[in-house]
Each structure stands twice: as structure tokens, then as C-alpha cells.
Length: 184
Image (cartoon, rainbow, N blue to C red; front, top):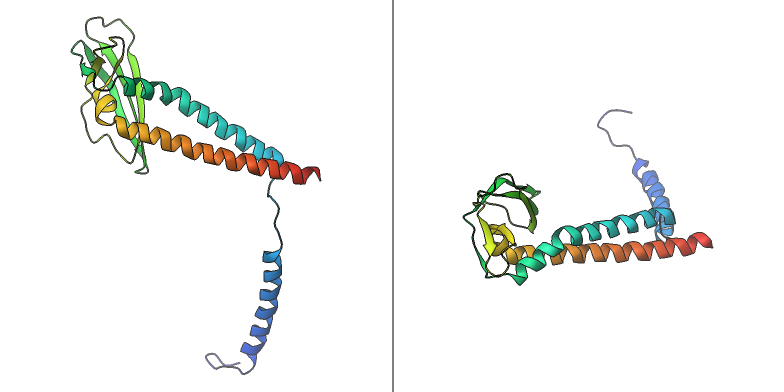
């Protein structure tokens, strides 16, 4: 066989093989596929997503409810100072911010930790100004979290909780389906 020369009949044989493979592939695709995975795998996913949902509610839920309840009552707290504050953005989608608020008047008092999450927004170099509520003097936060980005934080919390609920429902249905086919 000479390099670069076409051979008659080679293409026709190759097409015949491909036709048979296409027919076999179409039979495999048209068959009904059952759920993949053992029910234990779906149960582990169900528990893991439930734990993530619980962690979201425990870590961010109370602070968002408090900040929405006290919206409009925040004033700068000159007796407090923000220390060790930083925001870390992940993949331009979610930003996690942490700060500690320390008392200037009582430096031996333990600092108050403030953490919050935002979607599609970054810290942007904002100053971490400690604020205190005029109606609840024990409630302290960072102005950026309590006033400027409160709507973003609230919508981020609702969106994240909604996504986790949808994944939990899918995992529950797949667990149920896998458990029923496993017992058959």
C-alpha cells in the first residue's frame, strides 16, 4: 500500500462496521436504566446534605434574623474596634467574611466573632466599622454586614437553603428508588 493513495473498498467496510455499532448502541440507550448506586450511597448523601442544611441554619440563620429585625437601628460603636477582619471570595461566586469585634474600654474582654456569607459580591476593601443597635445594646455587628449588604445576605441565605432543599429532595427520591429496586 502506497502512502497517500486511496484504496477502493476500505471505506465501505468501515461504514458497515459503524452501522452495526450504531444499532447496538441505540439498543443500549433505549433500555430503561435503573438508579445507579447502592441505597447506602444515597443515604450517606442524604445525611450529608441534611447536615449541610442544618449547619447553614445554625451558623447564619440567627444572625440574619437578628439583623433584619434590627435593620435601621444600627449606629457606629466608638467603644468597639474591629480586629482580624477579612473576606475570602471563592470562584467569584461566594464570599465568606469573618471579623472579631473587641472592646476598647475593656481590652481583657473576649472579642465577639462576626461571620457572614454573600453571593456574587465581594468585600471590595470596605472598612470594618463596628456598629451597635439602638434598641438592643447587646447586639453588635459590622456595618457592612448589618446595613450595606443585608439584602444580599438575606437573598444568599434563602438561595443557598433552597438549593440544599432541592438536592435533599433529589437524594431522598433516589434513595427511595434505589431501596425499592434493591429489595426486589
